[in-house]
Length: 282
Image (tube, rainbow, N blue to C red; front, side):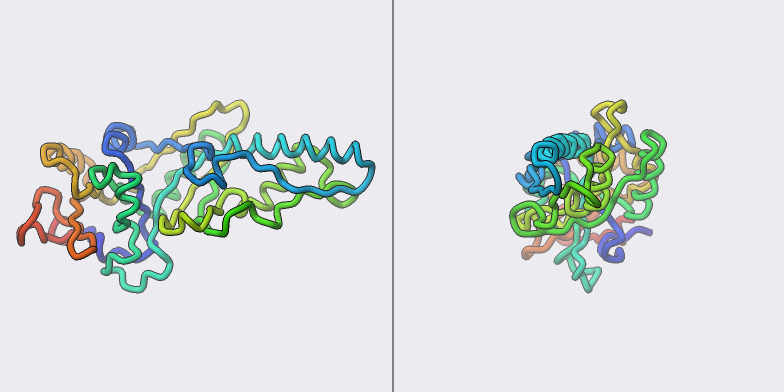
């Protein structure tokens, strides 16, 4: 019996989105489309990077290696694809309190879920890790990276410096790939601290050149509930209930009261009847 308010902190992942994407794309196909870094809102991510560098040896040769390595570096970043979710803050001590929980972020509801008229899809974290890993491995023979995003001051990580010469990088593509692998957390899992309220958990992989530009990964059986926003239209709620019944997951509705989000049974709104909890709904 699923109870959103009593789920262990960190055990679920939350994806805020528009209703047509939730129902017509993700849930209808049971797949999730990964996005490119250029589609991200953070300027730290959606622009090309120009890394500082140093070299030992002949200046012209090393400078040429540095220039080509920068091109290869940004080519790999351009081929990166990611899926972004929210996760409970690490300091959530009480699983029942909405403060810090991934499903109770007003700014996320506003920015990503149609100003509280959209949807928050709720996934089991470990089940989604398994589903994405199996799906992506089958397509490109690589396992995705996944972890919490770390939030830092503006700018690229200071320790990302390419050094060329004896005992350092040789300017080859393979050397750049090794540099990226060694520094993947700073390259792919850091964002400006302005976005810290999102508490992002990210899946990411880079696509081989021959694969194409789009990556879809199966969500498997990882969906645990569908939570629609407080402004979600009443006339669409019966259809959402039918979809959730077919998927075998609870259909929930958000209600804000005294600054806190209360997840309720989807078809009950307002008054005392609307205060049915997720435990009752399931």
